[in-house]
Length: 78
Image 1 (cartoon, helix red, strand yellow):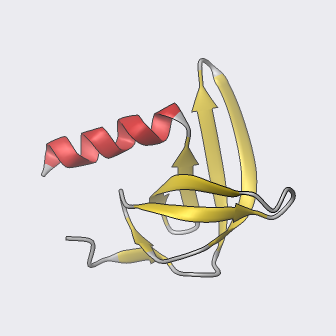
Image 2 (cartoon, rainbow, N blue to C red):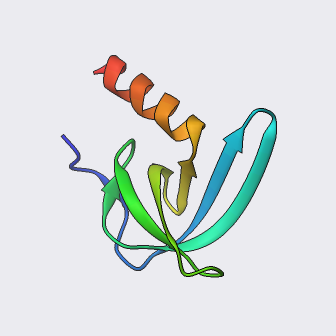
């Protein structure tokens, strides 16, 4: 199902975290491969923490409540 990889392990990824009208952007390193709509881990380059995100485009991912909504939409669209 996730054949078309858009993010590869060690890629630098821009992560958008959006909730309640607030939007934050961080840069991280992909801990694994991901196709569009697939969950994967990203290591925040500033804090060293790992966060859970969803791949949305090459080099881009979303996290937080928006990521859960995106996953649900992707699943429903299948």
